[in-house]
Structure formats: structure tokens, C-alpha cells
Length: 144
Image 1: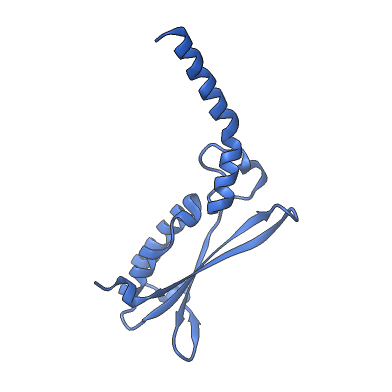
Image 2: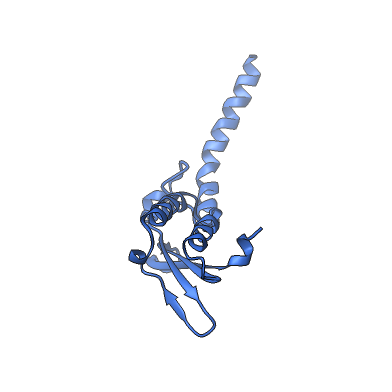
């Protein structure tokens, strides 16, 4: 490799290394990703991402939050695996597969809401606040 090519490559690597913290901060904010992953410096200013999932059964006349104890162990294991992945990838990973698994466990249910929540650092107030995203699912979405 020529010296000029090596120099250009070194400059490019240094430039990427200098710009990456800004890109990382934007990616973390835009997609609610874990700031402790992907080599960013935002991790030093935020709490670790601890996601919680609440499933609500929706019927015509009422809504009922489903306690974790009412669900089979196999589903709870799948939910835990999803929460771990969600902690890393944030909103890039919606709970579609978990909702489908829930409909498989509860064949009589036609509508559910999955609430994903976690504590985040609010940059404007410098306080920890609760961030919640609600996904609505219909059984018809998963039927062939």
C-alpha cells in the first residue's frame, strides 16, 4: 500500500472516530437504543436501559392488565429474551413476535396493547422521566 493511501486511510479513521460520538448520541436519541452499547460516550450520562412490558387485553367494554403470573413459563421466557434484545436495540425492535406468541397462548383474545416503558434522562430538565411506547395489535394481523 502506498504511503499516500495509508495516510488517507488514517485520516478517514480518525475523522470517523471523532464524529462517532455525535452520531451515536443521535442514534440513541432517535431510536431509544441502549447508550451503553455501540461504542458511544452517552453511557456516562444516562442510566442503563431497563425496559418493562405490560400487556393489556382490550375488549369492547373493558381493559385488563395481564399479570405476569397468569402467563405460561414458556411465554415469560420469550418475553424476557425480547426485553433483553429491546434493551439494546430500542424502538428498532417492536414487540411483534411477542404479541404473536401472546395470541398463541390466549386463543380467545382478539385485541391487545403492549406497553413498553423505561426510565430515560430528559436532556432539557436533567431529570429521569418515564418513557412509554404503546403498540396496538389485532389477531387478524398475524393470521395467514
